[in-house]
Amino acid sequence: MNYDAKIETARDTSQDPALEAESVKDARSRRRVLLIVAAVVLAMIGLWFLLHSRSGEPATDAGAAQVPVVTVASPGRATISGEITGTGSIAARRELPVGSVGEGGQVVSVLVDAGDWVKEGQTLAVVDRSVQAQQVASLAAQVDVAAADARLAQANLDRALKLVERGFISRADIDRLTATRDAAQARVDVARAQLGEARARNNRLNIVAPEGGLVLSRDVEPGQVVGGGSGVLFRIAQGGQMELLARLSESDLAKLSVGVRAEVTPVGSDRTYEGQVWQLSPVVNEQDRQGEARIALPYAPGLRPGGFATARIASGTLVAPRLPESAILSDEKGSFVYIVNKDGRVERRPVKTGLVTAEGIAITEGLTGTERVVLRAGGFLNPGDAVKTRRAEQGG
Image 1: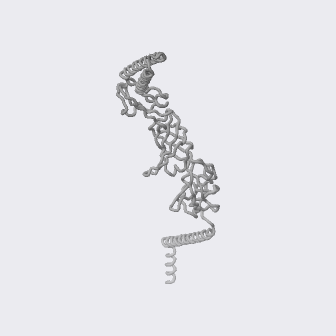
Image 2 (image 1 turned 135 degrees about the vertical axis):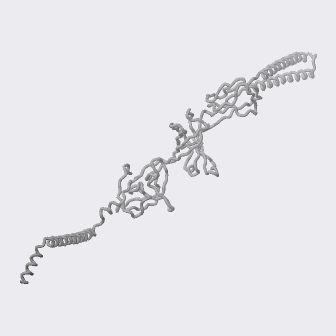
Image 3 (image 1 turned 60 degrees about the horizontal axis):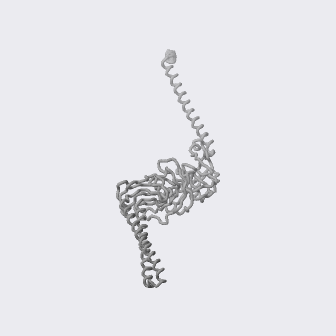
């Protein structure tokens, strides 16, 4: 009886639904844990194989993406025309100051104005000469009186010479009459000289142009009293010729010579005027270490004395590589550029620069022109860096 009871109790327990559901839930949890552990193990194994399989490759894609790309160009060799730029003021090449050189007087009329062209000897202003004219008339009358006296003395001498042969007049009388005739003739010469002097003084009353050219300024008006101390009344540019007084450093002056071509552009104008250097300053200012290059210019309405202008002066040519300013770097060791060698790595190359033009800077030493030169961003590179290159649109 007890045995049967135990069997019945066991059957009742195995057939309990709650116990059976809990048992199924535990089995599922263990299975899920096992699957997760297996997945983690497989992932670790896969990662190990991935890392070891790529450890022998030269570079990863991420590493390749970090190599910088630089723009390079081979400059070649070109004929470079040197150019020096300077600024200065426009002036008359030969300025003639004109004033009153006579006794002076009141100005009656002014015949020219600033901007007019005049010829040599042309009257610029007329000075009143009413008093001087009367003096000339008086002196002319004195010439006539002296001439009459001279004619009378000559006639007396001629008559005495006819009488001396007859013994009516002595030789002493002849000598006295001859002296009287000579004195009368001398008085005629004096009177004529005084008349000529008066006329010359009157001619100097008028203010005339000493040379032909362009009148730059007029500082006299009708009614003004002028004289030797009146100063400059007119200024004339001889022949209308102009010049630019270009201020240059002593190093630039050393590169120039008389006769070189220059282009001058006045401030506020887009027109350029051709000229040439006709004189270089023999001295250099001690304060700013600059001198003057005088550039001769033919007359043109756009060239106004006193105006400011810029000059571009040719300073010779040479054949050399040429690079933009962005490609040339400098430090305490001097100027240098970066070039890319055949292995794709950056190398430092010391250079010496020469002429500076609008197209670039000439390289006189350090390059042959066939190298691949880094044009930009050289300041972010170091010797030995690996780079990728890209040709400039306008390579050498």
